[in-house]
Image (tube, rainbow, N blue to C red):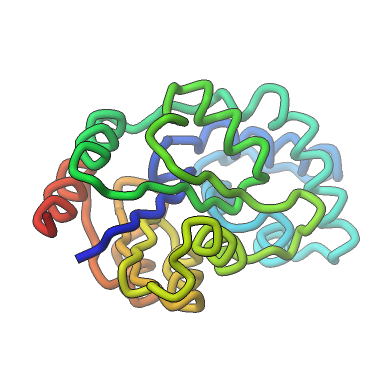
Length: 218
């Protein structure tokens, strides 16, 4: 079974949809686009922002770069704290630590924001490594983030011992590209169908089910 557990942040450790969708809405308004339906903007929770502005909104890359800039104006001040850990997350992390797992966070969110959010919610101490994306590299992929944390943890040559845990297809795709397993969670922002089609090795529907599955390996 696995020795290293890598967690996504948004939609896996914390319910971050409100802050992200409101900040996307703010960015779109600055660009002269209206977006009233916050639920529809949940497609922005998880994937790299630049990619989603291009794909979801049909923007040119130049306009999408502006969108990311405007998004950060709001998110970096207000949006990152419109957020909360999922029920049972702290208790699960404490249990997994006690069982000897090595825990890490691998997120597409900018590195500094990942660390601020985890610190704010008192989650930092559960993780041996925390890695987010480089805010100056807007095309950085999930696989790139996973590669960095594998290197820091010394598991570049032991990928069979590592699993990525996330709620969106880019978590699954990033894990596959990096040669590690992936557990999909449906309590976040991705559906069972999305995770299944991406090829997740296991899909769970709750924090409790995730914990029970991981503890079976002990």
